[in-house]
Structure formats: C-alpha cells, structure tokens
Image (tube, rainbow, N blue to C red):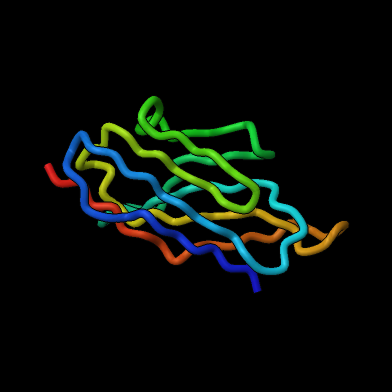
Length: 119
C-alpha cells in the first residue's frame, strides 16, 4: 500500500503565505511525477502545479509567479505566496510511481488538506 500524507493547510489572510508538504511512503521503486491539485467549492478539481522527473514543472496560469513546487526524494512541497481568496480550496497531493522495476506507472492521491484564505 502506498500512502501520501499531506500537511500544512490552514487559515491565512490574503497576501499571506503557506507551505504544503506531502510525503509518499510504502512500496515505491521510483516516483516519476508529483503534483498538487485543488478543488474549490462548486468547482471541479484542477491542476495547481506538477513536477515531472524532478525538474520540469507545470503551473496553472492562476498561480504562476506566486506558487513554487519542489521535490526532495519522496516528498513534494508547494510554497504558496501572495495568497488570494480565490486560492481557497482543498489541496490534494498526487504521485505517479512504480512499485517495481519494469512495471507500469501507478498513481496515488492524498486525503486533501484545506487551505482557507480570508479576505
């Protein structure tokens, strides 16, 4: 069983900052990509940021210049600066991984952590 454990969510004022963490554990041979997604009330889940192969990154246009994704082994971070009320959402961690060499990629999701930005 592979688990992703998220932490760092909370209540912050607009203009503030927050750092999310997600640690992957279990039977993992390698992780190909990790990312953060979010789901705001009444909206579908959307990509926030993704890091592929430990270097290439993708960001949603709405967070470019404000959020930074990084990875250290099996842990991914999301540094969120200049937070806006529109950033309020449940943030989910995702990982694409292999349990063994020569096996197809699998994926796992964290339980979600709530980020609330007060205006």
